[in-house]
Amino acid sequence: MSEGKLVSMGIRLPQELLEAIEEKAKEDNTDKSTVIRQILASAIKEHQKEKAAQLYKEGKITITTAAKIANLTVHEMIDYLIKSGYKTEYTLEDFRREIKLLQ
Image 1 (spheres, rainbow, N blue to C red):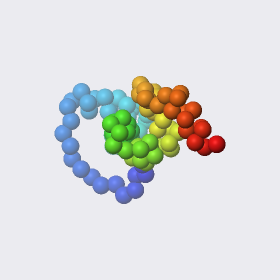
Image 2: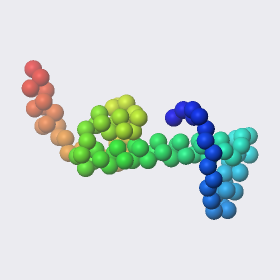
Image 3: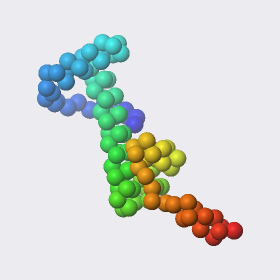
């Protein structure tokens, strides 16, 4: 996610969240705005992957569409699904049947 043009917005945060942001800014030797942008970008990317995975698991989209929604390659999306505990119903027999069709 590129930063592009930055716009300003005011938000209200719980004190403990602000303290965590300040601590991370000190650790990273950067400012609070940069920390917030990095955390938001990371959270949005994770949300996109979760949303794509859920739609795929529900059979509403293909793996290719899921990968596009998540901004991943198909291989990366498959890896994400596996790491998330997804188990396919695709069997060895399904695989063998498809191989025969290709011959």
